[in-house]
Length: 114
Length: 113
Image 1 (tube, helix red, strand yellow):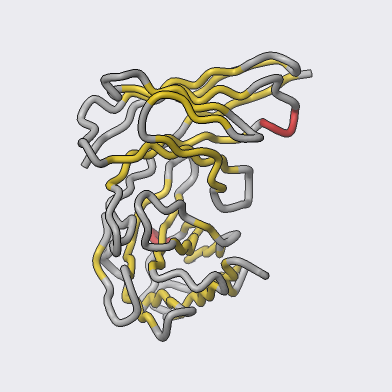
Image 2 (cartoon, each protein chain N blue to C red):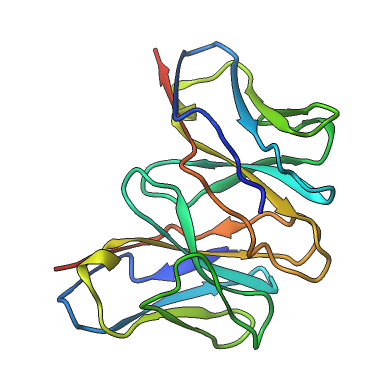
């Protein structure tokens, strides 16, 4: 199982771009990289997923270098409401299977200040 | 479209009591999961069900049992609750496609005294 390492916490100010990097040195060929966001008293929520290069959606961008041993979640112009814990997960892409091999670490607690 | 619904939202048990946490999803997902989250920790997988009729142990299965009642419902049972099982329990579901994202409920906060 691919283990991930990410900073325990980060601070930012409103309007800034925030980049959270996750290391996953043992990523396997068919593993996807997925990021989740969790607010207090709520379940995690899917943000973005990628396999290689760059992925962008309405919420964030995900940058994955060619060796795929790390990935960076980029949140443009954060607001107070982006204060949350962000989890990086690496898991197998298997047709017909489940994601029972996914491991959530402690995540990165992002605090956005006014 | 409610997504993943968990009941109850809160529960207090005495040591040795039993209870069942209920989870239902309306997204026609094949796979369902139970996680626990302790203060300041990430989520740890207790059990999962890849499809109706199958269940498998996750990282921390001891003290728990599960039932995949049908495609929609996946329950978690504590036969004899212990204070170490005080936690927030999250149910999730996912499709079976490659890298299918997990959809979580809002959790059950359980306290065992």
